[in-house]
Length: 323
Length: 96
Ligand SMILES: [Fe+2]
Ligand SMILES: [Fe+2]
Image (cartoon, rainbow over all chains, first blue to last red):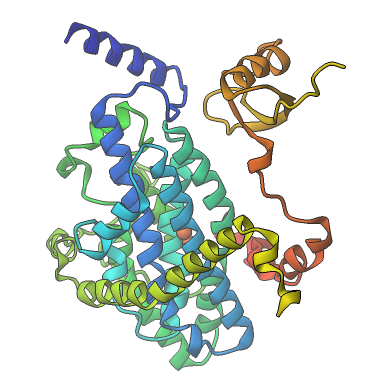
């Protein structure tokens, strides 16, 4: 007990001195658990996050936009892989994590349980959803767990085009026909509040925040990140002539931030619990894709085995000249 | 004459400080992993270059062939839309 205490003290002092924790370093069990949980949820979010956009790849309005969307969705798949690998440095297996996701036991970002109704949603997702994710991920580039931080640096680099391509779609639609502008506004109306919820519960309702901040897993609280996002995004909406759907939204001269209206946390809770508009659909789509990909994995394994057997066999047995 | 050198070759990766990834430093010959690790310390970290070392058999590295450079890497060259600079975003909306 006493030894554990001093180990934890040293661990905290090490973190306080801005050192990174690496896989073989001693760490409190709860730190390990928190990091594994956060990295696996993050990985799941990247993977499930492909679904709402993949829905529109075949219906992109031009070859240019199709190439871009394809490239973006491809990136998200890669992000999932980086994060699963980073989590594996702590001894959890990818199979287990994916199994938890497929069985509905694991969480992923609540935002991906909303439907993508039309092309404007591709703009809103890139601009708002990737924008919110980037705010969080830029912070995580300085998280205390080394492999997580390094994965984040790579991801942030790749993300940089995601938000810009989304905003470009919104910019073009907002400057288009009245119908196109109305679509852009409608997409903003539908995605604004769920995007704000992406940062998680208010600080007052988030009991784990203090420990995560002390361990420097997080560097900013949910509310701080949310405020940062609002302050950055509101002028971007105004610039293209769109209106953020919040009647309470007002610039506050004293604080130097935007004041914004209350978030419907009941909606958030319901979506997290599995009762969002698309929870079942997303999980079903993920399971279907996993099952339908089974033959590819089987074929790859069979091929590898065959190659190994060939390499091990005596030359005469595989010599095709005999045939 | 003397026995030929049958010790395998090991690749050495050194982490210079926590937070950074292990980076390839070079290689060395050693009879086993333990000795490779010790030799790597002596050869590659004499001036405090590292705080962690990885060694792995060179034979376990699978490398792409220089002949395949074209088919492997050229396809990325015509995909400028993977870069942020491909998009014209006005300066007025701030860094994105
Ligand atoms: Fe991503
Ligand atoms: Fe993204």
